[in-house]
Length: 460
Image (tube, rainbow, N blue to C red; front, side, top):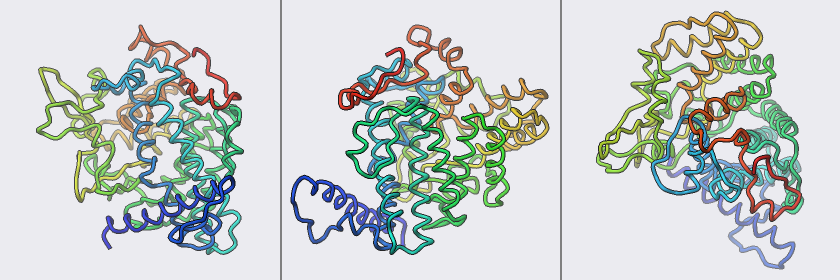
């Protein structure tokens, strides 16, 4: 069966499940019958097929692509990475690192879409936990996937906003007036969900296993390694990254293959309907285009690459329009396609080497850190690092993350914040608009109007 047909059939069932779930929620207030073609929410988690379709909604076109896309674009704009070439004022605010409380992009893509995914994950976790009729192995897998998604979204939210309401209930009214939890509490939930997911998920990929399009144990482990790094639990960050690296499942691929959907480096990618990525569409343009890509690299960003770094030639190119040179992210090659070979890569092995390199450096394991850093440098065509002490090694790793992970999920923005460099780096780049409190985005004003228990971040 062709990939397109698989997604059509599965997505149709996903929509039926979602519609029926929404209708059943309304029945508490309005007595309306369920159409004979829909599935009652009470029955969604009674069979393997319908439960699987409900969890597949988390991967669907509903809001997940927008969430992963804009978490990358807006994060890159907030850092010293991306520039916006269009004129939408709310997006331009991210380019100035001066986001207002009424910014619709922040509210829609980073808050509303996020809680939409969390809401679906909560419904799945509740339904699966209470089900007694689903095949046990499948129940564990689906429950692990749902917990991964909840952790994945809260990871982004706590980095963007700090403490946010911890919505963990399947009953939406229970979540409507929650106060903000502390950032520490959100981090604890992220780690707890990922540890649960790690224990529940199989090593094997479900679905079309060669495409690594469903969450497995190693995807949960990879994100857990990242969460431990961000919370400065370096021993556990090293241990989790070591599990992924030592699994024997993944290997660093040639630069030209890293973002192809058969790459040996990919740990998790979200499949796309026609085989081209949201990143290719927004970072690239067709050869005949008379307008630049929506998001381009700062010209100064290209100076971060060392002489001879093959990532500069493989993952960056340029186009000149109206006498202006634009540097484009060239990781994804396809702008559009009907049967392409690029999905949205979410997790990959190179990051795990860099996580372990940093965790080892923080624990004064200089040789181990150097070895991990050199794995990534060698793939890029560079000589081994000259950094030989903790301070210079951490600086070298920070720059390696910059030139390896650019354009992906706001890594650069989050790195600047977690290492305390945002004020110096972004303040120097955007001196007229930057303020130190911009390390956290404002809680959307409309959300505070709806929920009086929400408090605003400092500086807004």
